[in-house]
Image 1 (cartoon, rainbow, N blue to C red):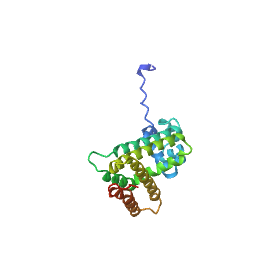
Image 2: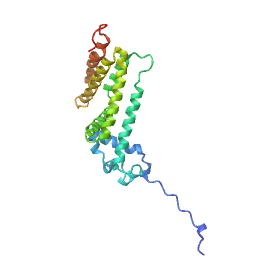
Image 3: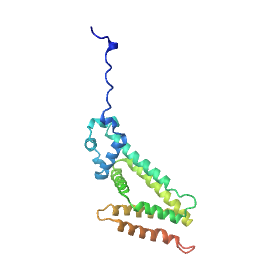
Image 4: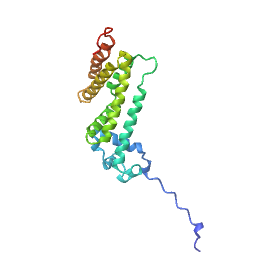
Length: 216
């Protein structure tokens, strides 16, 4: 006698595909590393899938298309930079010289993670000439960094014009140092040398200027 529908065995619950167990951040981490190694043009869905050991179809569990992946990758970097800047605001009671030197040290003493972040930023800057949205975002980041430095220099000098010029010079020196330190021959000795000459001319010389003398 055939069994009724109610008596039929319940089919087993569908197992979650392995692809679904990959998180959105797993894909973003892989895309970030690809951009670090080869620029934004190296961020390709098929290559990322091979790196993660899944099929390309699994990508669509987390992103609609390649454009959404790139947008999410850039947005994550942007949010990280803004959060870092917020954390760089001087606590009450910290002298401006000490704070500027701390920012300089943190900016040039690059860990492996920092170097990757710096290379990703260089990849973004290479793309900025072709993408107005990226250019605008980088302008915002640059402006926020300069405003942070300018606030420290304003406390040190008491002169807003000089603070603006000094913050610009320090920022350019840091950016140039990053370029030098991303070369294969760069080492800790070079990083220390760059920190010492930047501090000498753009921090200590300003701190020790004679009262009433021109700052620059």
